[in-house]
Image (cartoon, rainbow, N blue to C red; front, side, top):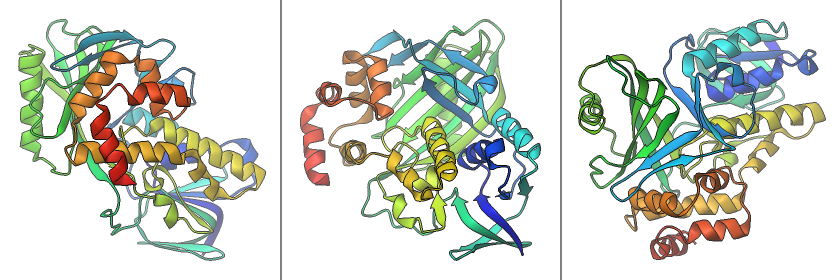
Length: 377
């Protein structure tokens, strides 16, 4: 049985981000294994995030915008988001960039195998459909199967996007639509976003917060109607498609960590429960893990990134919209009509002061959130 210092199970956003950190020469004395069942080459998703600084993936940012538009039945505003930039990274670029760096690192190995079982121990054992591997510490990027979410707030953010190419100039390439609620809500939270890469090309995506997953035809009908009716674009081709589901939940994933098995990424609660954004939080988490390894400290301390007071805020938000005390369109419309996007981004990044939080809490309807807060208590 091959033995490693660290085994990373899964080569998605979190697994590749951590492996990229561990390519550093500071870890060259460690044996590291990355296990992934699939070849990562497709542009199967788009990673978007806002930032005021340059990150490790700046070279593969395919487009960034300094202006964002928010639209609903009651609001239509264009914001200059300086000092933030809203950035987009294509999935295929992200995979290729990380895998190239990993393959150049002699102390990291990659195998394409299906993981069957992971056992805690000294060492831990990872069994695949082909081999077994021993590891001093395991990083698991996917959650435990059969989790009972009944005692937590849970909603799926399910999405489908088209990259469309138009025959005529149709987009302002320096301005992205961050949220557009001008589509039938169907008793849910539904919005579109439009991310142009040039005047004739854009990613047009539908996002829905609900646990009622649609058929492929239903997603495509909504996209078609939006492109042709809301954007008034009739002559276009669909260049690429993406589809997926992101869990938004207040569930405490940290309790599944053991002494030698750490969950990271989605499996650790890195997806922000109130927004579905994960990219920046995963980067912070993997930076912290790399630092903890260097310092010889407990690797399960990465959970400390997700602060308890913001977890309460997220639970309250999910309670309010999932129990119909209010709805996403109303909440986001009031926030973007009264507050700057810079303050909203700062809050979603969990870096606000109490004074700023009070300002945020009084923007949306207070009574529904007060009821939701009491219900969560």
